[in-house]
Length: 437
Ligand code: GDP
Ligand code: GDP
Image (cartoon, rainbow, N blue to C red; front, side, top):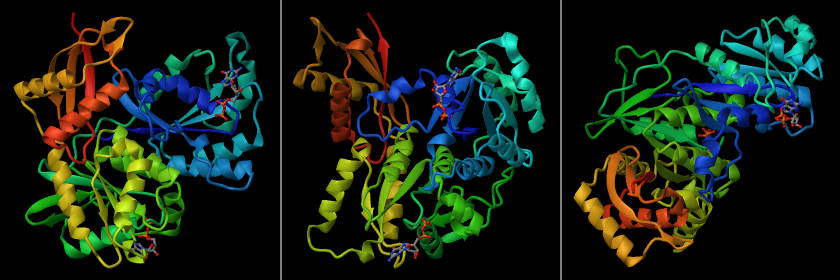
């Protein structure tokens, strides 16, 4: 199910990242200890009153090189209007109304999406007189908060949840593999999509109840059905879409949410960049299976070691997803695009693997015998029992004497043992620790 995207916009220094951290709260800590992921905290899932949404701090998306702040803020706002479901427009009650705020408001008044005007840095609710000016923005009554102190943020979240779009039903058909083609601009995503659709039979969608026909593309290959998620921006590139593609982070977030398999496209000539890491990291964090497509392989001068060296580079740079198969392709010539789809089939199947409880416990017992868990202050971790809690991604519940005694490196060890025994190619594996005395 697709999660709504909530974007925070506003001038620099109004408190966007402070609010972001406040709203996502403790969620950040959960994944903190996983090394290797570029975690710039631009986006994070948050939850309130049972609704999960993805919060995006547009302040971190600096895509205008010049120091032209009004222009930069305007870009963030355009992006938010295009890609988000709800916009939080943050202003600074201490600094008062500025002309940049007025520019932003003018853009936001034109969108039909819900906009919440929020006045930050209001520590003293006796002095809300300072908010009167903000009524002039024409976006209704400002919601006063203090992001730093956490004052009134619960009310803000209540308001936010009340304007989120209704929960949509699961999309597509059950036996359809949903694929998101993601990557930086210019790595060759549209070329790849066209290469796939040029070869395979495109199905004109007649799936009832979906309003996204124009955006998703269905095709069939060897009797199996696939859906390419959110191809609008990829296939027909208008100038505006191209401009937005530059800020592809949010677009990738949304596509990844709705897919089962992420096809992460890399550019063979450019190696692995920070933005590649960010985009691939999101697929990993969201528990999606991934295949890494190294595109433009036709442009690379090759000898016998080239692909091995490139694979090593990827394993090093994307160390958090060494499970993902790597395929060297050329979207331009169509080389190995077929192979790529075979890998999509493989990882889609692997993310649904189920291991029986007896097999699982036998494996864990052997793993523990072979390499005992760490001890801390004379207390040793004991794994009493394990069971598979779910698939997509495969999730294992470990009942232990004390979850605090578990180390990330030991989980990695168990994960490696599971992979060596059962495969799980292309899919992340999750562990949940439960205390049992
Ligand atoms: P951003 O540039 O919009 O992301 O703003 P930041 O979150 O980096 O905050 C800018 C400055 O405002 C920092 O010095 C924060 O400590 C401060 N700040 C953020 N929220 C509040 C608040 O609720 N009250 C006060 N007094 N200061 C705040
Ligand atoms: P997108 O922005 O990720 O959708 O990338 P495009 O598909 O628009 O491709 C960007 C540029 O790279 C275009 O000029 C393509 O013709 C070129 N390109 C894409 N794939 C390949 C490839 O496999 N080989 C070569 N030589 N060029 C490619």
